[in-house]
Image (tube, rainbow, N blue to C red; front, side):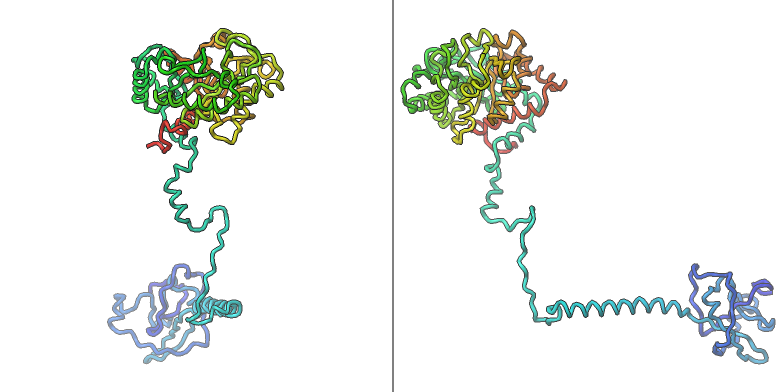
Length: 530
């Protein structure tokens, strides 16, 4: 018996001259029987040598049957691919006394066709491409000396720009000079802690006549953004200058140092140091706006010599009645008179380097009582208020002359029922945001009047009023006196942020305006924070 069972179908014997490659497993198909043909060519086969015959241990090659058995030598069925079995042809070769039927195995021709066909198709496609190239692009075959002329690139699209010039490169190296103050200020605000940011929106008062530990605490620990000084705290030039220098030296961010130097017999702060100044009414009565300008220039020099950088003047109320608060403090009883003389004063003041503050928004000109002792009520129509009281604010805010744009606006506690029947103006979103910001277009700092005035404290505590003022659109709180009151205001602002009464965005906006104002008047460098 051979390695195959007797019932196994004989398969084609191997020829020594044509030994097929070992087929891949995917070629196996044992179910297909081998067929014989009549078109095979005779292939001489040598009898197996002794060395070859001993490969199987019994003188036979593995998988072959003896010729004396009258059966063909064949590869095992498991190793005979269907394609090979279909192409095998039995051939009888005389070999001595007996003849052996040998069927040579050839390489599959179908595989050669499969290789040749893709190559032929590739050649055809290549010829077509070359032909089309020759027809539609004459430069394609122009020769080695042909030079293609570069087409200048057309710079199109939003982000495609020509090469930068030397001036543009220099501008990029000095980018800070092209940024707005508010953009730079916002970088500082982003780096502040919450305590520092809240401190910046408070202008503190102090009860001492020297640089006291209480004042030092408000500046260093509570991060106050500004300090207001009164006449009793400025007793000599050297003492005042020394105290202010200590304030600035101990402040992390330069301070707004303010005072009310309006001139005249009532609202003056420098009489211990300098001679008295003209009142607003005297300046207007001179009939010459240059008088107001000269007076403002002198005041600015005196303030700056002491270290004061904010004057809470001029008063731009249009006096309509002889009210208590306005005696000698106004520049006239018509909007135009106020605009002319207060404008001359403000322009000279700010040109000299002192921040001007126009007040008392939206206008105390029709108030008869003392706003420090009660809440004034202005019973005028909306049209009258817009035409008179608000006229100076509109003129200055919208002026193309930057020196006529007020650095600070101070609102006060008065009620105008025709516009807002419930809230005092400085706590009213209608007055502080809808009208001042949105209608008149003011984007500068708003500093409240002192929040300990009776028109406020009769209804709200100072911490409550501070939150309402910030929420309404004010940027800086005036009134906390001493560290204890300042801490109470800070805590109220933090609580309002936590419970959602006041948004962080509103606080950021207020602090950014204050820092931008300090940069604009060179109190701090207009450079990104380090």
